[in-house]
Image (cartoon, rainbow, N blue to C red; front, side):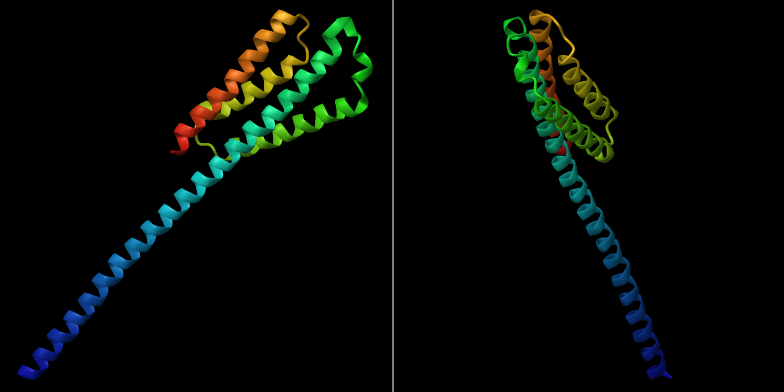
Length: 158
């Protein structure tokens, strides 16, 4: 009888040990998966925010160039406003919009989402400004807005 009790205690102990090990391993696995998912999302955010800032800078560069072509020297450079330049402006705007949508999709911060919309609108507005003073002010504001976006995004992914 004593051998049976010893065997039962050994089997119960083995089962308890196996159950406890399984519980802790499962918990550790879930934790590892959560950390891996969080790191992957962090990397996706970094990629999306960088891509948006870069695409917006490129779009801004084309808009500024086209503005000077249209407004500098009382329109003397209007012959440089070619269909290719207009096409480049449309393409860079589309690239900026696509990058903005990607950044918005990975962001959980309403402030970042709102900022991406506002920056694209401000850069687009550069095209429609008539006076040099207003253009210069908006140009400086868009430059600073992009820098501020990068700073805000960097704080979110650290």
